[in-house]
Figure 1 (cartoon, one colour):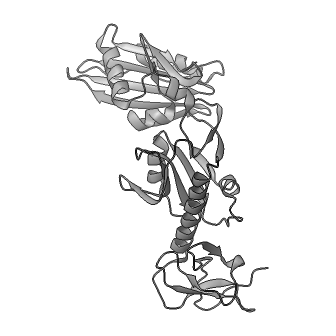
Figure 2: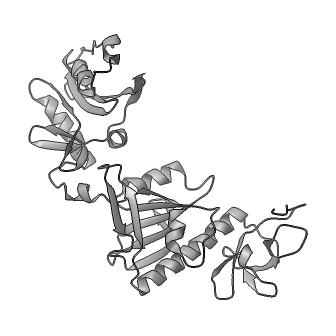
Figure 3: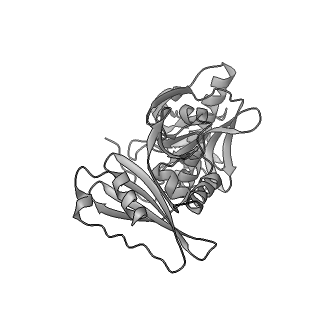
Length: 330
């Protein structure tokens, strides 16, 4: 059982050795010189019989244990990835894609030429970023504790067509086994091969918004359609000659709206846009159990929706298409 710390002792779990390699306290040795991975100040391995083993600064600093742990893990990850690049070692990852619902496998380092330790992207910080020769980010790794990364940062990176991996700050790597470390983390997102091949599907936010505006500019002034799987890509709605990729996560991001849970397994997102004629465009994204659908309708000046949800829409045979059809045709 770990011996507790007493008094004002601070439990630093990590330090760097004289070569700059991260060392966890379990691998520390008496008489060796160690340094803080954050401030580079001298540290001592305290391996006594009373307190839990830990590193300590020789001089007091403002380095927090959390920040020191993040810096050490970040350094360890960068060393392993750079070594893998030099030896042309593949780093295999496997994930279930929320975009197409398929399981993909890939080499994390395919097309990668550089590994950055600490990377700022539009004021969102990644502990590690791997990039191609053109400087494009292919993957980010985030060391995760109770406060970092923030939900906004996680969502920012997850929106990109890149690998996003979170690693708990509490883990201790084993030797140089990077794959084992990844297994203790979570692959939050990755580039979807199916989505990348779907050149005929509109994915860009501005193009999606314009398509929704255009469809109600024509007679009869409304549209509704189911979310289907097209060429392996889920959550696609066909709109005339166009196909729009609109999973609920994407809808929240680029359309927004108020979430209205109507019953267990039934919810609808509702958004309104002003129209140039003084009217209002109402937009609906419905999820009913395992079905999805979107609808949109333009109301003229002074007109308002009159739809009312009654018990029939809670019937187990009701689909999302039934729900949005009702909203836009009333």
